[in-house]
Length: 198
Image 1 (spheres, helix red, strand yellow):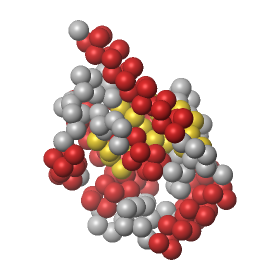
Image 2: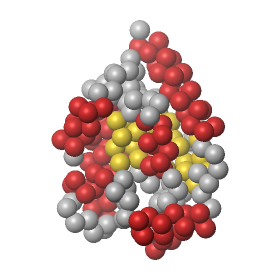
Image 3: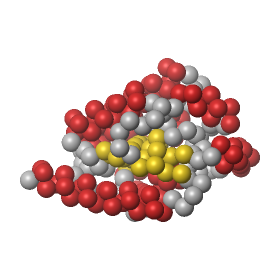
């Protein structure tokens, strides 16, 4: 997994910020998390850790079991800590559906000093269903997700409200307002944190 991410860094060569930041997406499959993450990364130099992609680096034929899920996420937490400590801002593109999983990100933010922002992506069920159906039909080369409608419906009961302050993103609407807000956060959080380091 680290080799794949190091290759990403070698290709993109993002500038090293004075203060690395941590941004985590949250939301069910098909809610537009990866689309938003990609648009944000066009404006802010983040290293994207996408669980759908990294799962297939770690496990050649994913079974999507609870044990596999924990293994993927635990590996990602270690990698996020590693890259933040080495000066890179990280964007964690994952479901992060409940506070148990999000608590690891809170701890990483506290231990590394990296300011954390959460973006909770949602979309109406009919929109999600259409997207997932389209994804299955197209088998887009630019998506690593295997989640379909069945997986989406199974995950609905697992989702918990985000307890901390976060950006609410409805991707069935224009995402640019939230995108601008998050970019503004990266600028202000980076400046404040860098000042505090002096």
